[in-house]
Length: 401
Ligand SMILES: Cc1cc2nc3c(=O)[nH]c(=O)nc-3n(C[C@H](O)[C@H](O)[C@H](O)COP(=O)(O)OP(=O)(O)OC[C@H]3O[C@@H](n4cnc5c(N)ncnc54)[C@H](O)[C@@H]3O)c2cc1C
Image (spheres, rainbow, N blue to C red):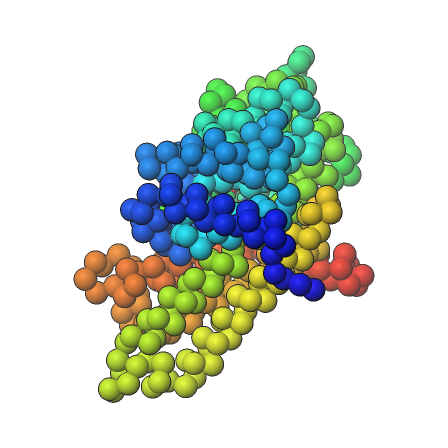
């Protein structure tokens, strides 16, 4: 396989580079140089800060918030490969992520399953950043076993009344809309009685309670729904077929392929640090042969991830939704997150525990924050065990455990 860009792709890459060079404010690139990932996701949940919002508008005018979406819905109508190149260049330039759940997986699911009216109503506002989305799938008794969810949606004339509780809803406190799963037929087998809704978060009957994570950061929430009225036109796909719509959402969520470059940048930063730090008259890198091997492993792993991303991209380019491959990518990327953070923490020693101290925290405390965030990466979006089950059953054809 030839990994080099075709001449057309190379020209597009250059166009993106020139655009970023000309348009990305340098202070924004520096501020967001949190090496990507969760710690850099200022544009992920929240309505962007001013500079991020302005950057997003610049992208939106070219259709580059979601380059592969159709032009009629505000995308640039480019191929998946161009979108991948675009994401790589954005990551290399340390440009802030602006997509969030809306661009990442709510929008693509609406493109696949939405009515024309739903597409017109939601897609452009998502791209312009006018609507921020969150995801209400998990419940206190339904995470890995999502199909056990208990939130009920009951028909009432032309509406549904939704009652129940969601949990771990990232960014729900800042969101305008939620993709939500609720049970519409309690008597059907559990996968066959679920429907998928597009919920307006300003609807009466919604209460949000913050959940603060170990970084002392408010990112996810409990969401309580008490007879929340949702018009029937906000049903996505057919009633009781929501499980299959949700499966596509999860495949989009898990196959996020923009990570390889961002991980590579973190490993580069750790290498630079190990070269600069002096231990007993030598650089840390010379002093510690074990660390050399460990960093070499981490670097190789970022390249493995890149190759995996190409597999996902080539499946998407054929118009298919990656499934087992999405799980392979999700599993690998989340565990790599943890390995890179652990390598970083072992390099920084006791000072590595300093998270925000401006004087003493090495690398501005970013590795410490990454380490704490990475703990959750093998849980969010489906745990590693669940990805392994999917790979075992659907990929390898092994029997259900
Ligand atoms: C940072 C973060 C953000 C999140 N954001 C959202 C969000 O925006 N919206 C949303 O809906 N949800 C969100 N979640 C929830 C996430 O999807 C669930 O936490 C996840 O699916 C696991 O479910 P659970 O927490 O109920 O754990 P459980 O399902 O109770 O699992 C507990 C343990 O048992 C293991 N286990 C369970 N079943 C099996 C099995 N069959 N085989 C082997 N092992 C098994 C699991 O792997 C895990 O180790 C988020 C979670 C995190 C950590």
